[in-house]
Length: 233
Ligand SMILES: Nc1ncnc2c1ncn2[C@@H]1O[C@H](COP(=O)(O)OP(=O)(O)OP(=O)(O)O)[C@@H](O)[C@H]1O
Image 1 (tube, protein in one colour):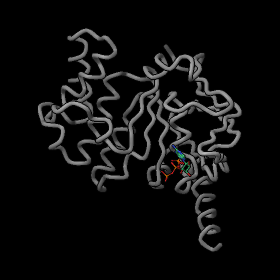
Image 2 (cartoon, helix red, strand yellow):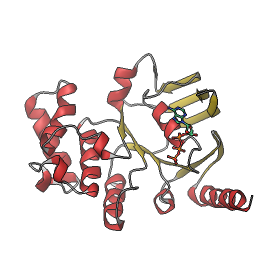
Image 3 (cartoon, helix red, strand yellow):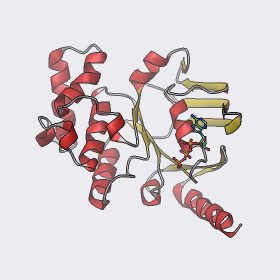
């Protein structure tokens, strides 16, 4: 199934009586989209809406023909989510078993599961990690294994919430390359402006609103201006 655009219509999120996202209208259909903004601007909240991890207080989020809150099971198959902290995502003690876990939940046949796991690990250059104990991996390896677990499910869109925060420069590059090599569409929340600069569309959030939605140069310049203003205040 081709996923179609993800459309947010008049979406607001209120948490503890605070408006965290205010009246957002967005159509997300580009191949690569980065979302940047200050701490607390609403980036994680926004991306959690995209696969129904969080439901809007008002408004609607559509994934193609599907609507979050109504079609979440189908949406989760189409939209994968790589969390900031891979510790929250890796559940099994052995790496390959962790990758099998999600595939089993999809009800895939054993041979299909094994073929997908081998292909994904090879594609990310992680074949040597298959039999390792998950807890023994480095932070960077864990981040890539968390991505591998999502890829085994073959989603059509992958959300990354600050995937490079815990990575050194080498692993950041590896993850960048892994993302560049993905066939799937990707939406990525990041404070890493070098990473954001690689994406064709960059959305800047501030106080729960979209203040810029453009190509990377313009968006990053406006984010820098915003930071200057906030620091001078
Ligand atoms: N469960 C919650 N209950 C109450 N407030 C929340 C909750 N989750 C998030 N918030 C608030 O919503 C605002 C936006 O949070 P969010 O995590 O979306 O920001 P962010 O842009 O991803 O920030 P960061 O860059 O620091 O990760 C913050 O002020 C946060 O305190």
